[in-house]
Image (cartoon, rainbow, N blue to C red; front, side):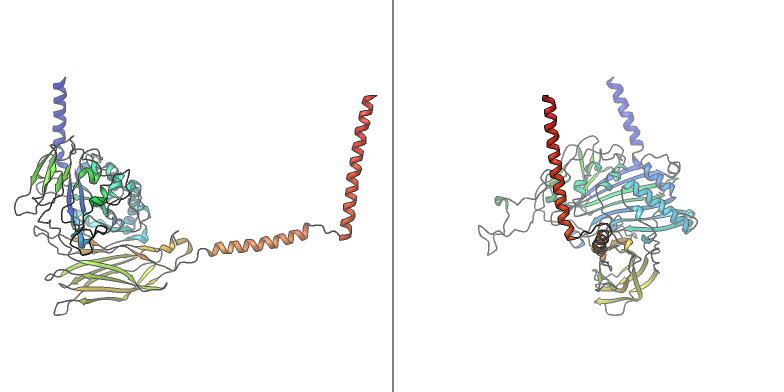
Length: 596
């Protein structure tokens, strides 16, 4: 009996390994300065085009595949993002910003249709399907929040001649709050569904307690050289920046407590140091942490459906110097990178075995290279008053030798009417000796009130070690009172701008676009005093009550003279006395009759 079970188990593992090359997952951990940790979860699955068209799914989630098939969506990109990436402290963005969206929810897709009207109808079907699938407000992406970018996005899939009838549509909800209701459907799309593999570390309390968080879903057709049939690839990523000390707090006692006196690390070199005064010393040692402390649990082994052989079989990678001490259990095998490459170490895990990583406190002489951003952008609203305002965006090129060429894309709401003739781009600080052409091309699509928003795309170039300021004025429209939200005095959300840096090269020397999102903005609009209807109703009701009461008294009340009031009272009193006497007589008469 035991032999038959062993053979059955071996056959099952062989069957799983036969299809393991179609699913891949990896967790990359990168310690950041000031006690932060970047955790990047990457899940990828492939499905042949034939099986995908026939809806015979193995690793591709059926719920998402049917929604895309029903809306004729050939390529999909969905982003859920909260927080703000700090480039000055954390360095370059993960995945070069390609897996990151603006604050809230961002969606763009290529839809196959014969006309634009048909594409818009299928776009509405897609947003409503994704809204129910991910428990988000994507159904509010209507025509006023939908644009058709011309320069900012390029398809990543291989279409061939089938890409002639594709329409690109882009929508964003900057005010959407991302929470655990969006993470749970995300995990259900995975083959192991959070029961094994790196997805077992995903906990909503930890993910959404991070300083910055981004979830991304990308679906595209892919053709691999040497493979006869193309495949449909789905990529799901989650990137979070965790505060190590904050994540170590137990769930039953999350309130931060002051550090005990005996554990304070003071800088005794300060002249004002004393027994009752402590100036904290800079942390020069690496912060200790482990997977169980940061995520609240250990990893439940490797996912049995993931690839078990080859370079992609390493489920966990740690970007730390080789001199950093790392402690692991017996369920993992460590592999370090070769000399000359960025220092990191990866681990191949065993299925059905718990895995944990522990990094003790240690002083490390070398620091990991975090990279830097190719361009810095700051976007703010200027001006004052309820009628007009201005937009100002400052671009800074930190490179002293190389210029930066990029596409700047803005999607403005219809009630924010820009004046294109006031659009100016000027160099405010530069070390470049001669004139430079900043704006190279522009695509502008004006807004239509209550129908569509404004779309502005600019191809710009910033010289080395320079700062360029882009400004324009706009007018604020007056809304109908039914179009104001309940929190109208808070302001209206303006979607972040998308920056696509062109002609960027990666480590292999190949062209690779880099994306940057600015922060979202709050636009104050002329807001009526919504308390006035309440005041009018109260005043009107008071006046009506007084008027109605007076008229009613005049019509119903009977007026009697003052001399008649006294006689009436006496007569009433006499009647009462007579009635009492009669009742007493009747009682005595009744008693006498009974006695006789």
